[in-house]
Image (cartoon, rainbow, N blue to C red):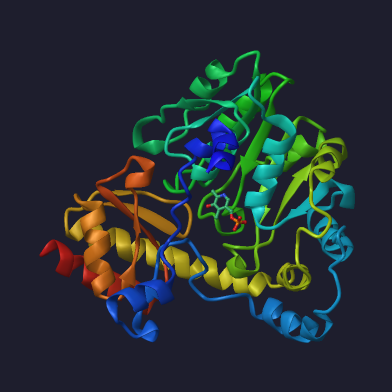
Length: 366
Ligand SMILES: *Cc1c(COP(=O)(O)O)cnc(C)c1O
């Protein structure tokens, strides 16, 4: 078919994103009851969705014949209150992944390069390739910590975007506030810093004050999401925070009704659900201590994480992933990230976490 020859080489070279496997998929394939499967593979909320968000969502269902507000006025007003920043500092996306893609639309092209860490979130690579930008991938320091000095050194004249992430996925490691400030002190003005803070609300250690640089109107965009802390991954909604000039440019590339009505209503309500987020943080602290303790007991290496998931070195990661599936446990294999001897597990309820450890012991004969 001739038409397929016209597809750009960038798009042709893309490998599809490998998501955590959906429960229904695994149930069908292995003939298991979906209700007996625990999905601990996509860093979703361990306590389900925010109750305040769900209540608001149910009430909004009768309005689904209406288009959403393309400008997401109410949500931006609510964000403006939360962050004490003008409403035009925010852009709402169909997941924060869409914000990353809009950054690509506006700032990446075949004459530019993007710098990011090795073992970084795979979407930085996807977006860079999609828009034909050269990727400059910087090795991490010991323990998978982003090397901001090396990232700074890698910036070239043609670099337009640096992707940073804290806590990072899949490593769970944070960028220290000192390292971030030192980087921001010297990063040149021709670079847009993308600070991906998908786990900010549930981070288990103090994070850099990235928003202070937004307030100074520096070339930086901070991205956040409702998928992780608020448990709204299925609704697809996230946002970016930046100087109004940057937000304006990103809006030029945005589809008119990119964020659906249900997601906008739920997200606005979720911002009031600080109790829910606190409960999640308590759970994640308990889960981290429990799983780290069990790993130490089994002499398994793990990467100390500041988010709601953890990399565990199991040897044959793909093999353990497959065997755990037969036990009704979906974890994430990591070979796509060049970490074939690891799995990544997202914390569930403590019952699920105990079930995971029992399954892991079985798979590894411990
Ligand atoms: C989950 C995640 C996101 C994006 O999630 P959305 O569901 O698109 O909002 C972005 N960055 C990192 C590092 C993530 O782990």
